[in-house]
Image (cartoon, rainbow, N blue to C red):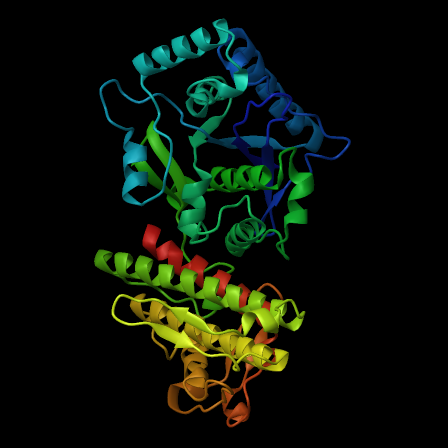
Length: 453
């Protein structure tokens, strides 16, 4: 069976190399359980100081090649292609950046500049002088670039047996529209895994526990390795080149938006001129801010319901000093806990409505007509919150009266707004707050792909 590998380059002391090896089964890209007891163990890093020892690095990359062959034998697969999260070569002498890095800059995706041969020689000399003078390894100069030397050697060695591609997980998640929250945070990890799952089909119910057994890195290391393996599994017509092939290039998925996108169940075809992409990027930033506001409002409501606000301290005279006049708020409005909770509830409703409106606007900019079911979710929720602030009610007509269904990862949701006409809005009518955030993930993943394509 054909398999595809992803490597998240790391050389920290005693750290096992994060590797993911995946196979396509029934249309889903499934990672092999590389952390199982019967599987071989990847090589360990030796720390930044040892990167300066060529023999140590060569031994590491030879061990990596042997590990991949052992994985093939243990699982009965043949690795066809490997994607490596590291620069494949040094930049050309005298150039400001590699071509691939310049394109990343244009896409506002940050990455560390890859030095040229002369600069690496200077970096190596500085690092050796630092250690010779008794400097601590933890303060080794240019540590954020020294690791690239390991990447160069991995490419050199592994290309002798396999086709190897250069990847950048941050560019992959940007193509998915899920790079707004860093993967080291729980929300960021969940969002990126969920966005990728819409295209790879794995895992069926995205959660970070699924990442534990697929490799020896931390959760976010294993996710990066899996994303790399995903790119490795794609034929060239399904990949997009960032930079100049064949050597100065970073590969990302060429997303079609059709497979596994529940929020776009009607298989929308986007036909957007380039100038729309910038407007859509700005609209997605509005979506991000609106959902941060919603998150803050929900947390504040929970805080209030738990009685963690001291009304005696909170409900006091408050004056804001402004350049053109002061603004004063008297006591009495928040003296009772019930009043605070009521206002906090209204804040959740208002921010929820704002999040629906920003998504509606983003779909409009993308050229997705509101008559399509995928966009109607946001259009009719905007209608709901246009009618009543303290107690929003369903008041639907025209385009907002159609039955709508979407299929987030928790399962199919169907709502008949016309049947709810006149009723007070309740989040349970949508399946709960968590469903709304899942719908957000699907929508942002789909819309974000347009800004990269």
